[in-house]
Structure formats: C-alpha cells, structure tokens
Image (cartoon, rainbow, N blue to C red; front, side):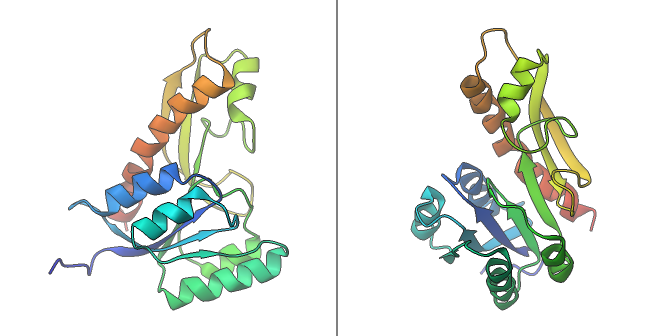
Length: 192
C-alpha cells in the first residue's frame, strides 16, 4: 500500500482534448509525484479529456456553464466534497471569478501558452509571430483576479522559426507545457 499522506488532492479543470491532463495524470502516477488527481471537471460536455479521465478511473464531471455563479457554486461543492487542496487549470477556457478564488482559498495553477506577461488571453501564438518575436513559450502561474497576471512559478521558452505558423508554434509550445506543468507543481508544493 503506497503512502499517500503527503500528496495533495488535486482537481484538473479542462475544456478540450485534455493533453495537459494526460501529462498531469502520468506525473501523478510517478513515485516523486506530490499530487493525487481526485477530480476532473469540464464546462464542455464533449471534451475529450473527460473520456480520458473515465478510462483512467478518475472521478469526472461536466458542469454546464450557462451561468457563472451557479457553475462556480457547484464547482466549490464538488471541490469541498473531494477535499481538493490544489486546482490545475489545463486548457480551461473560462475565467474564474475573484469571489470563487477567495472562497476556494487554496492554490489554483494555470498553464498559459506564452511567456507572460506577454500575450495574456487568447491567440498567443499568432500574436507572437505577427510581432516577429524570436521566442515564445509557456508559463505556469498562480491564478489571481486579473487575467494571466498571477505570480509566475515556471517558464520555458522555444525559438520561433521564420517557417513557424500559429499551428506549428502551438505544437512546440504544447510539448513544453507537458514538461513544465509537473515541474511547476513540484516547485510550488516543495516550497510549502
């Protein structure tokens, strides 16, 4: 029987294919993991990540996002019920309210596909290419009330080639995301 006392109960919030979710699940099953994924929540009924959570025997829930307050109230109840200590946003395409962040009152991490503070929000890859940046990358940061503005835990950059399109850059950045998200969790929790 493995000792689980040090692992943090973690919820992963997704909206799409769940590639960062896969990376986090893989990490959670390693010996050095500091997390146990107890819940996957999506605002998108057809998110491929829910199928993956199902196949991985992880409790997963779709919550309709027709109203922010009712969505967040349901989410808070689920987090409490599952004794969640940490939330990882992994391609979750909704913004959590300040009220939710305060009520949860534990770390919420997000992975963002740019070198913050550059390119907050959407369309990060095309914006980096249009501005003729030499580098792009990914950032894991703590979620606060301002969009993509919380304390940065970890960043890694990739070279933008002249031949890169938004799509090819997205693929390169995604590979980095999968590597740095677990490292950022270790960095955050090891300093607890």
